[in-house]
Amino acid sequence: MAEKVNSPESENGDRLLPYGRQYIDDDDIDAVVSALRSDYLTTGPLVAKFEHKICEITGATHAAAVSNGTAALHLAYLSLGIGEGDIVIVPSITFLSSAYTAMLVGAEIVFSDVDSKTGLMTANHLRNAISQCDPERIKAVCVVHLNGQCADMAEIWDIAKQYNIRVVEDACHAIGGKYKDRTCWENVGSCKYSDLTVFSFHPVKTIAMGEGGAVVGRCGERLERIRSLRNHGMTRDVGKFTDRSQAFSSTGVANPWYYEQHELGYNYRVPDILCALGISQLSKIDMFVKKRRDLVDCYRRMLGCYGDVLQSTQIFGVQKPAWHLYVCLIDFEKIRISRADVMERLRKKNILTNVHYIPLYRQPVFSGCGDIAEFPGAEAYYAQCLSLPLFFDMEEREVERVVNSLVEVVNL
Image 1 (cartoon, rainbow, N blue to C red):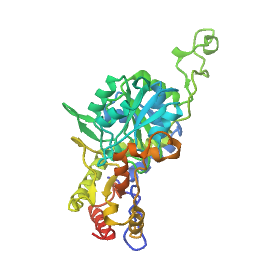
Image 2 (cartoon, rainbow, N blue to C red):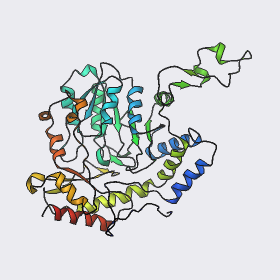
Image 3 (tube, one colour):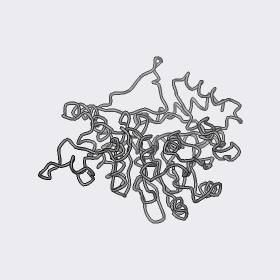
Image 4 (cartoon, one colour):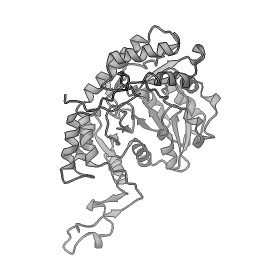
């Protein structure tokens, strides 16, 4: 493995431990420099190479690289034909983009509750959300693989098919993960039980591109439309030209400058520079996933003796998570210390934490999408969750430092 290039140290000798951080080595830098020296800075051959690599890892047959995970969600909803009057069901514990990108295409959001010990939407939560609205209007469900562990895709898929609902997997936390279905292991993003899967490559994620995202699926026509939408809705496909007098010369040869815009699209392209970094990062995905999994196992061992005061999130079903976040569930009422105070005390020890996430129905933009009393699971999860440091070049001794510091600040 090439030498790493990022290891910030704190003033007192204990380095600062953020809740997440990218790992960039010399191989990554060399890949980006090579792209900078090439003929392409924006969209070029590395985009297709990156998309091919994503398909290799996930088992999907088609991929479209885009500028970020939010753009991936937006284009996924657009490509499924979701619009005014449609309903999209979204779990209440997730990042803003899972829901508001559906609103951007005109859809109404219906939130589902989640499991209080995992933050995941289960099949029962989906059934309950469906029962709260007109099933004829439900166009899609967004299934979020929170923190890196997977929801029950086979069960959710079966329910969705009963109601003719499209399924979008928000796997922005989960690239490289696997889950056991009824018969075999499936890669996250294989789309065996979904119409589309989206990924994010933000720096704190397992794979970092600075900014980047992808949509994968098994329908080539749908992914072709996503590629068009990411590029203004523009096409240079001669087979799709409608104005033949402008598109072709008198000899029937396509004019080299010609293109057509068939629908309103976006500039959601991702440049070769970032794809160069993404390709280099993807070559290390097995190593990244294993190290994060080992660190989470260490957390789970060390926190296993504190009962329900300090506990890890539960593992749902049979799976091999690709952990993006390590979330500790803390009974702040029992320890009689607020979450803000715990976070500040840890910060003074150079340990940075975060909260993932504020339930979406609590956000002003989603006012009217549900009352707090309707989501006991989400409220219980939110009341206790705290994301502790987890990143590739963290060491097990640093997990011990985090746990010992947490035990100290909560007076256990």
